[in-house]
Image (tube, rainbow, N blue to C red):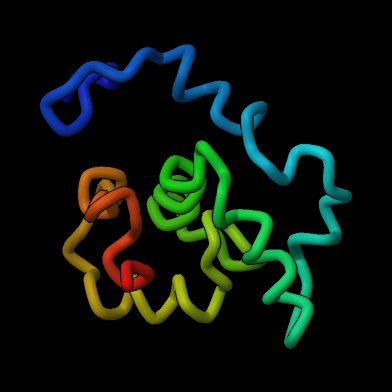
Length: 106
């Protein structure tokens, strides 16, 4: 598959590379996203209004990132999702349901 084509639409390579520069967490210290327990709630809150939340979460899922809060999900939540849906190789297309990841949509 062409690396510029995902989900039937064209996503520019530049956009894929720069999503990290547009994250709501950009101004945070990296340690603020690698927390445990109740502190994860604060880290997840940063993600709620982030314009690149889906890119962040899909990247973490695709690459099996084990630690930290990514795209509004904790490592435990991501592991559970990966166990439930092991057949998915590219998560971006599967995450969009009214702009929310399926497990987070209310």
